Amino acid sequence: MEKLFIASDHAAFEQKQQLADYFNDRFEVIDLGTNSAESVHYPEFGKKIADAVLENNGRGIALCGSGIGISMQVNRYKGIRGGLCNDVNDAKMTKLHNNANILCLAGRKHTIDLVKEMADTWLATDFEGGRHQTRIEMLDQE
Image (cartoon, rainbow, N blue to C red; front, side):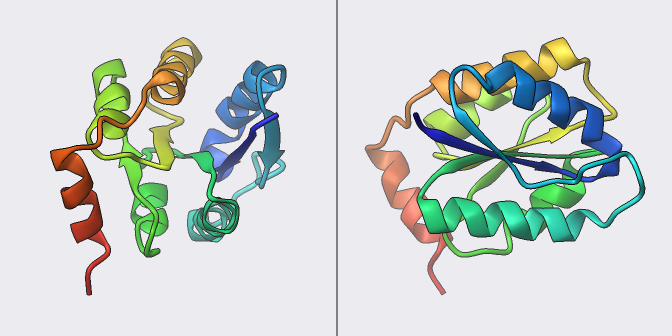
């Protein structure tokens, strides 16, 4: 069973828990925390998920209150392409054209139904490749 890494800060703890439960029958969900709604620092969990995705050549879903902070953190790592999505089309395109390996979502902005729909769409979409591969390679150039 494919591993799916998931992490959040306190602001998206409930959504993270619901997503972990939702995907538990389709993936080996690896929950990297946080483990409560008590205040924490999103960079710690962004680092955890970026490291796990890189070490396992995997995919992950990262959440914080706005999605912005955690997306900024995960994108600090060479090889990570974290896509902040606000609708289903964003989720499709971040995989189709950008081959995102971490889906970044806002816990305080979207209903859990929309969060699930965005995650389902992202997971079901394949990278188109072709001209987009050249652009992906440019992202990690020094």
